Amino acid sequence: METIQKDVTSSMRAILIDWLVEVAEEYRLVPDTLYLTVNYIDRYLSGNQINRQRLQLLGVACMLIAAKHEEICAPHVEEFCYITDNTYFRDEVLEMEASVLSHLKFEMSAPTAKCFLRRFVRAAQVCDEDPPLHLESLANYVAELSLLEYKLLCYSPSLIAAAAIFLAKFILQPTKYPWNSTLSRYTQYKPSELCDCVKALHRLFSVGPVVNLAAIREKYSQHKYKFVAKRHCPASIPAEFFRDATC
Image 1: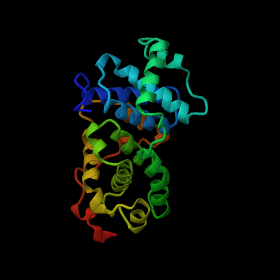
Image 2: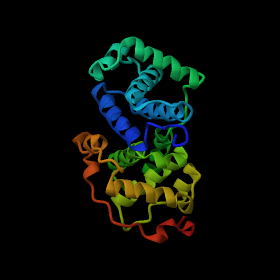
Image 3: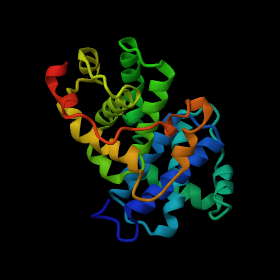
C-alpha cells in the first residue's frame, strides 16, 4: 500500500476499519464478513491508487461484497449508502463494487485469521483449564485488533491466529506456559516462530493502535464477550515462554 498510495495513510486505513467494525455491529454481520472486508480493502489498495475522499466508499463497497459472500440476508446497497449519511449514491457504491470485483478477479474466498482461529480455539480448549468462552472471546479480541494495524500484514493469517491464541492464554494465566505440543501440532507453529508476532500483538493490546480508536475495545467490553477488553495484560512476556523446549 505504501508504494502505491499517495493520499491514503495507514492511519486512515485504521480509522476506516474501526468504523467498519461499528457498521458490522449495527447490521449484526458475522465476523467473517468483517475479516473478508478488510482483506478486500487491502488487496485493492495494494494495486489501485485512491484519494482519501473515496476511501469510505471503498470500505462500504468491500463490505457489501463480503456480506453477499458470507451473510444469509446481506444488507442492501441502499443500507450502505444510509450508513454513510448518504455521502455516496447507490450508483457510486455499485460502480466501486464493480471496480473491486474486477481488481480481485472475482476471487472472493480468502483465508483470514478468523478461519484459522476457529480451529485453533477448539484445539486450545481441548487441552486447557482456561474458561472456554473467555479464551475464545479474548483470542477473537486480539485477532480483531490486528485488523487495525497495517504493519501486521507482514504476518500470515494463520500466524496471527496462532499468536492470538498464545497471547490470550498468557493473559488468562500469566504464570503458565501458554503453548504445548497439542497446539504446536494443530497450528504447525512452534513458540519461537510466534515470538515476533505475539510481541507485536502484545504491544497492540497494551498500548492500542497508533490512532486512538475505540470501536473494537468497546465491542469487547460488553458482557456477551466476557468484558475481555478490560482485562489486565502483564507488561512483558517471559522469554522462556518462547523456547521450543517447553513443548
